[in-house]
Image (cartoon, rainbow, N blue to C red; front, side):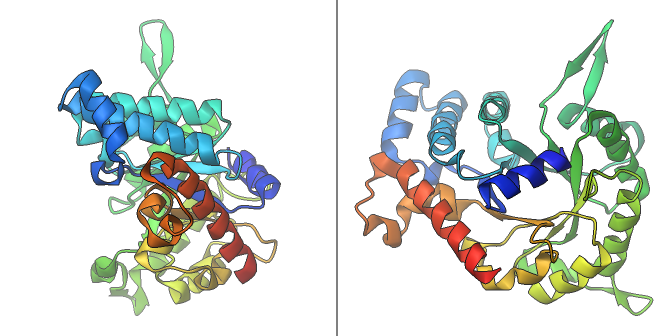
Length: 307
C-alpha cells in the first residue's frame, strides 16, 4: 500500500490527505434537517448527516487527492450508528480508489494490540473463514508502550502489505510535555524517530517503509531533524491550515525526490464553506462541497509553490 500511496501522489502531484473529521457544527443545516427528518434527532440521525456530508465532499475532491484520513473519534461519539457511518465512509473512499488512513491512534500490548491491528488493517478468523474488519489501508499508532505495542501491527502490515503511521512529534501545543523531554541529553521524539526507522527497516516497499511517522507541521525544525533520522519513512503531517501550518513550513518534511511526506488538512477543507474566503466567491451552504474542492486546490498550490 505504501507503493500505491507513492504512485498516487506522483499521479495527482498532490501530497495531500483530506481529514474526514466531521463535527455536527461543520455540517450545513439542510443536510442535518434531512437526516433528522429521516432518522430523528438521534445518534442515527447524526450518523446519517455525517455520512451524507462525507459523501458529498468525497465526490467533490476524490480526483484531486491520493488519500483521506477519517478520525474515528468523530464517528465513535455517535455509538454504533456512528461506527456504521465510519465503515460506509471507508468503503466509499475505496470505491473511489482513495488510500484510507484510519486515524485511530491505537496502542496496547500482546493480544489486545493484535486485535486492534486485525480489526483495522487485517483479518480475523471466524470459524473456517477469514473476515475483514474496518479495512483501512493505514492506521495511526501510539508508540508509548514500546515494541510490544507496535510489533503486532508490523506483523499484520507484512501480511496485508498495509502500513502504519507512528506518533513521533504531534502538532498539538502541549506535545512537548513528554515528546521534548530529554533522555540521555536527547529529546524523546528523536529516540522514537530512530525506533520508527528501525521498525521500518524490516518491512520495505519499493522506496519507502510500511512504517511511517506522524510529525506536525507546527514544528518545522523538529521535522527537519526527523526527516534525516527517518529517510525511508513516509511522514504524515498534521497541523496544516487551521492549526497554523503553512506550505513554507513543510519543505524539510520532504525528501529530495519530492516525496516522503503527505500533508493533512481536516476542517480547513471539510468546513471550508464556513470561511469568508470562499463565501466571498459566492459559495452558499448548499454548495459546501464546492468550497472543499477550492480549498484542496488552494492547498495543492500552496505546497507546490513552497516545494
